Length: 170
Image 1 (tube, rainbow, N blue to C red):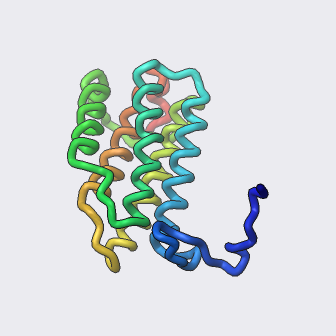
Image 2 (cartoon, helix red, strand yellow):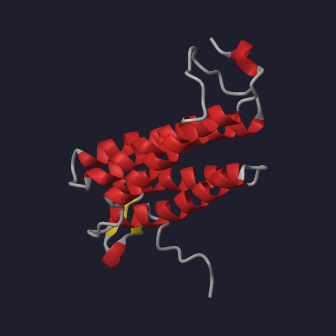
């Protein structure tokens, strides 16, 4: 069996229940951004990470797969519990951080920079989801999920900052 089918050569793709849509459909755009987010989290996971970060990020990558299923189908896959888990992760990591007094400029180290990059990809996915939600009704849990996920990636990036890097903040 070949990996290519040629079915999408005309700019369309299939969704759940064999529904054909344009490849620039807002739902496909969201799923593409989520796919990119998962790939960027994979790059983060390829770094040397605290075990807690590895566990959280791998769980999130699995959740992002089902997230896309909710975007292209009528199923509800992201629940309030998923959002609460992200909030718990944030609270646990954030409790060890000092107050943020200045804006952060990504790049003090590779891990922090990669987490910031993933955060910006997450924000793009959130913006594309907002566009989709103007024309399609989606669960509020999926928008909350992406919002919390970007917050989590921010606190992870702060945790990855070396303590002596304060001079690169503005």
